[in-house]
Length: 69
Image 1: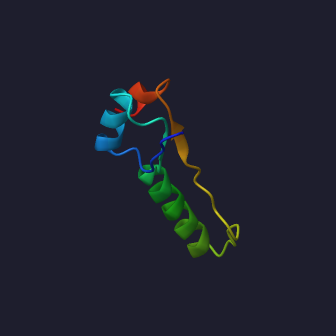
Image 2: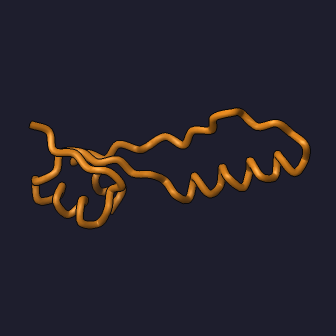
């Protein structure tokens, strides 16, 4: 059984470090904000942005956990 979470919260990361959580995903709010501002600027210039703009989740596993602590 794979135990998974979402948001890579501090509690989730601690659970992963303790071996109680196998995977979580990080929603990069900073990147989401950057893309929102870039899109707003493009709209203000009269440009038509893509219909769907994706900021992918970043998988967090025990192997890359240290990058998210």
